[in-house]
Image 1 (cartoon, one colour):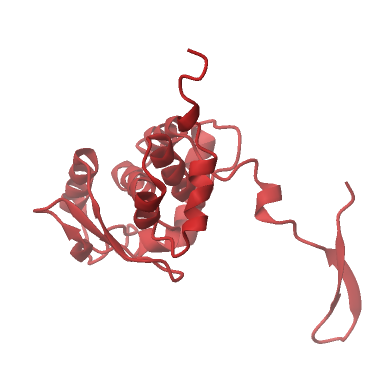
Image 2 (cartoon, rainbow, N blue to C red):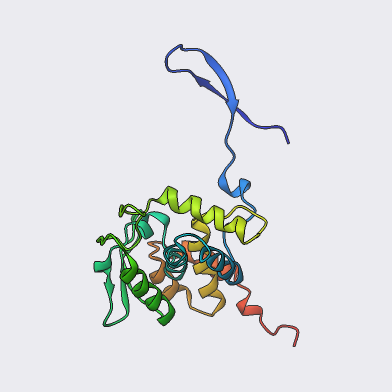
Length: 206
């Protein structure tokens, strides 16, 4: 299919020229989510990195709570309630904040990360220099571990947010609870996960 073109005017010369029109992400990517098995594979791949504990915990936390990359990188230790095993999730892009439970394996991973954080920081995920991890850095790391896990397609951070939605929908979590977990203002955004879930069809041929 020939590339679509658009006419642009160069700001300095005033010259008109045509350039390729960038296709939407949905067309460029094979799919917008990961399965639970694929998430497990990239977590295992991440553990082999130089900073394997940090990288694997980033992926697990992003997936479990359906975080955007920016929300993950903004995460602070003050948002973790160790005594109740709760995470105070601060959403961006106009989404609703909420309080999530933290499962045992995630709590242990976060505890270990906090103990091993050489340069103490208010931020949970930091670079080797102690600065907050950046969304672009996380995107590069995710793409790299996707290649190491040999998934066969390019992996990007937002697939983890979608993976969370699909995994919970497949476990039978109702749309309203899923909406609260993901922080959607509009429940129609959440309904897409339930619509594409195979859970209602389990046992159809038995």
